[in-house]
Length: 411
Ligand code: PMP
Image (tube, rainbow, N blue to C red):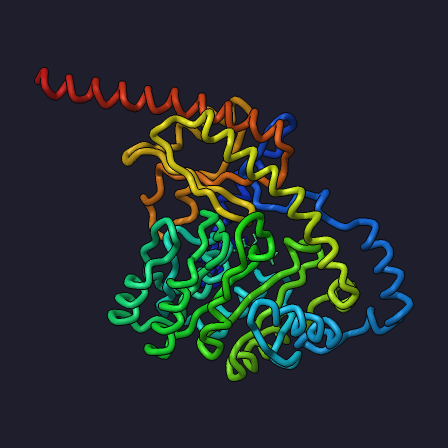
């Protein structure tokens, strides 16, 4: 039977996530994987989850196991409306829709807004999972230029002037993959540009609570509420396996999101939403978040210190004030592929940065490094090994380039 012939056109845009493929390779015993993008299991409040499970059973009984509103469990939406105030987002609970992770929100937006050839503006590099969610709807990506402070407002202005984009996708705080954060001045400029062009932004914000230094920066949603769909998640501040995300979208879009979700899963797990509602309403996030931060902050510092000490001087890297990732970049022309293979042989993995670009051939000298999964000693060891591998590969590529030049000169 020819199953391939049955596939819809949209599957041409669907490919196995390169990162998932990498994660398969690197899950071998003994491997120190800086490739993953997942929270440390020690960051899950297991004892509390046990207590809250009992609370949910007692308080909600069978309701926690019944079908519920597509928009989401009301106590959770009330809790989120309260929680979002500290991010400058003032909404009623009716204006919030629960999604199955923020990933579910990305797919829903793709489904209702992207048609074949629709233009979607994305940062280069950007979150791979967003591209994966959007690809089946066959968009055409328009590239937004970035520097060390994230997306450049001039680039957004230019893109909106030259293209009719459906929406812009940004991760403005502690971006995945780079860890970069848009400073306030740029957010204000971007909010103004969005309003002036009547453009829509998808602000994906899974990491802003994981802040190890500095002070919180207002969300773009708080600066241009009518132009922004804001997506949040409890994955990094509670437990990702519960799959609790949420969207705050302008009302006309919200209506379509609900219709779309009805066709996908009717609603997100009632029990998990009830657990999340108790976590937020009981004030446990305030208690637990500092513990997650205390776990990750020294890990990030250890990785930064090791990079300073062991990475070749031709490399530069980001120094984010939070999140889960650092982004390192080698000299122009350096191709990290060989280094990746050699690092795997020495039991250290990372994600080559090229996977985070929507266009092929970019980011060959870049890498994403995750620091949440291992303790300081292991991270230091991994960076030391990586530093050695990179130094060797730099020398090898420089040697090859010299030989090539001599060959040309000798001809
Ligand atoms: N957006 C970004 C930028 C992410 O890094 C992630 C998780 N890797 C997600 C969305 C999806 O998270 P979740 O579905 O668990 O909420």
